[in-house]
Amino acid sequence: FRMFRRFNTSISKFNTSISNPTTRIMSGSDISSFLEQKRLDRNGLNPHNDESIKEFINNYSKGHIEDYQMSAWLMSVCINGCTPEETAAITQAMVDSGDVADLTDVQGTSVDKHSTGGVGDKVSIVLAPLVAAAGLVVPMMSGRGLGHTGGTLDKLEAVPGFRVDLNMEEFKDVLRSTGVAMVSPAGDMAPVDKRIYALRDVTSTVRSIPLQTSSIMCKKLAENPESLVLDVKFGRGAFNQDKDESIELAKSMVAAGLGSGKPTTAFITRMDEPIGYAVGNWFEIEECIALMSGEADGRSDDLRRLVLAQAGQMI
Image 1 (cartoon, helix red, strand yellow):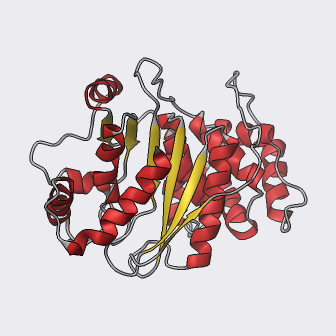
Image 2 (cartoon, rainbow, N blue to C red; image 1 turned 45 degrees about the vertical axis):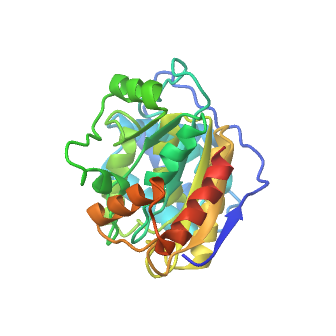
């Protein structure tokens, strides 16, 4: 970490509020027309509307659309892209495929943070309790390792006895007592994302800005925080190594967050080398404890600066 730049956007909020009436079963011709529309839309002049996206995702979620039909659409999205409005609608439809956390009985303002990850990215482990100590509620559902990087949950489980598989009531009890909970996503939150990601993994459609956006943001929005801060990495130690691609992903995720009515901002951070000095799940936990205890040395200065910058934004 040698540079970070806060990124915001003035993209207007999109009306992607999606209700959940009884799903109309799409006919074969309806599905073919939907697929054809995206296959031919190479310049975004004939995008899907919110209702058709909701209907397509709902039909797939309920088993009325086959995997090969969804795969065809995913490939068209990967090749031709989506408008910001389409991406926001896809994200919201995936959120609506499952439960959304109800935190109204947890006192306090809730805010969350998500990082696209990288080698030695341990920011959340220090950031979340720091923000909670400032009086906010941090309902953080985190992920596991992606590619060559360790995930926040993997690091936390290096602590003997640390549980990340809390149910919703346990999750809220921890939030009420400590102000922060870092857990794995509940199985009934955005369940269609798991099925779609499994298809993307075997059809070479993982690296797609609209599909990356919807997969990341549907889970964060299902947590239902009042606002969201994103940390989008680039560089040799990050999953997305290209800076321009990371900026595009940040813009897309911010637009999806705003489109769902959540104040959302993003940081673009360089990650050509580990943040701080420790690499490896337990070693990174050890460095985080030292930093929170005021015992870290100068090797953790970049970690400290990034934590403080992002905490300021969350607060």
